Image (cartoon, rainbow over all chains, first blue to last red; front, side, top):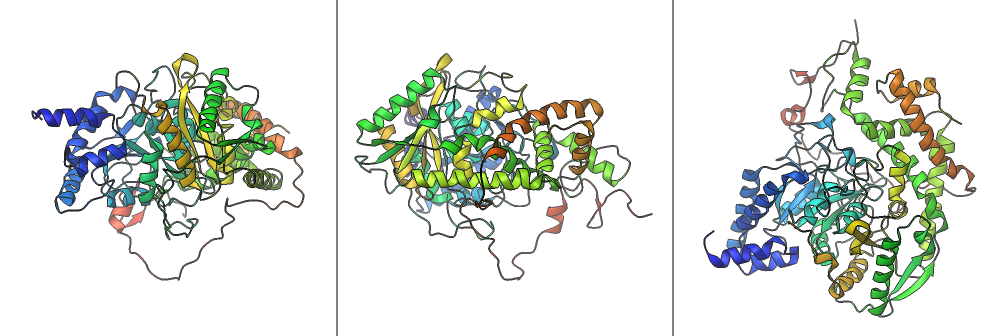
Length: 495
Length: 95
């Protein structure tokens, strides 16, 4: 790369949004191979973040060459030739898939997850697989069997979880976009902690096919991006009906960019008092309130709404998600795939030892809680009761949406915490998801967008939530906010 | 109510996770902490409320019972910890 034009373009590409990269490719100012090389170099230089678990430059470059050939044949597309990285819970044929668990060390999937497949068809070039909490269980990425991920803004802070690798990679611009999954906040919480845009669509809108199951009635694929506009562009390729996923919603595809230029005048944004409860850090509240005023300045109308049962989201979630996890993870028995203990007496002993050695502490804890709440004599009191309270929470959202178009509030009660600060007590860690769990239980779309910095200079996220299938309007409000502010364009020093 | 060591051993056996006494004691303390947090839902009046198992109240979709794909046996079994002649091997269960 001795051509000065190429060097200038390459420098411009490092922090470019997905939309800008698409334009550079369209204008032939950069090739897919050049972009892949650029980001592979950044990944290599910043290996200390531990964001990536599996990188195979030769496979990535082959995909990039194929994308360049498609463009040379006259094909176009906003995503054709743009790099992406996938959370390690999406199975991939050409990279190992471990869900950050010892249980699946070296696992080779015979197929690609639907989400992986769709982005590949759109011509996106995969950079590799991203670290996360084991089986997506956690809020700090400290539960990975392959080590913690560092927050690019402050290496003493967690990046958030479970999609910590995805958030750190996008924050440090090791990838312009990354897939992620949300079960109780695993996209929004790391997005807030790492200062990037993180979006969870409506449950059932993205396919779960090939996404390693944690809690099937909650698991939703989504994205970490540099902007809301980038997310809208990528959602166009990602969200649609998939007959291979039994809970996929059969609705026509839509254009998620269609409202981006929307005028916010008259848009009603509900502000639930319950999301500004005791325990909210003053700097987080100040940044979120400032963002709400900014939206008001753009013409939105703030409306008081009430979600009194949302506070029960955490207990409901830890019953429902743990129950579903205990069922889903029963497949890891040392027989068909994954690890098997080296020494054992008989079949039963083999399974018990395999699971004791293959699962980490948090996964075991949730499997035990799930097994208990589903066991004879406790099912009604725990699982059924939690499923009923879940409906109360979902119904409250529906009542709130009769008074407003979107709901806004903080994503987390504080900025990213330090390593080890919350890992001693599981319940303290669980409360990190207080503001993200309710919308996951209701299955509504929700997102986090950067809105400032709080304690220790760590990023703060603004949460927006919308009713089912109203992603386009939620992304539009976020985009209008991002046109008026530049928090989302800040990149941590040294990257 | 609170779980004792015997309860934890019973749950761990149901979950097929080997656990020793020291681990069971630690697990009992942690599970009791989690269950105390969960107890808050017991006080909610949910009479007449149907349990929610799918956020959009979707129902299981069925498809015609027809062959749609033929798995690649070799590729599918390649991840098995022990196999022979296209079969998964497990410790002897029938004498």
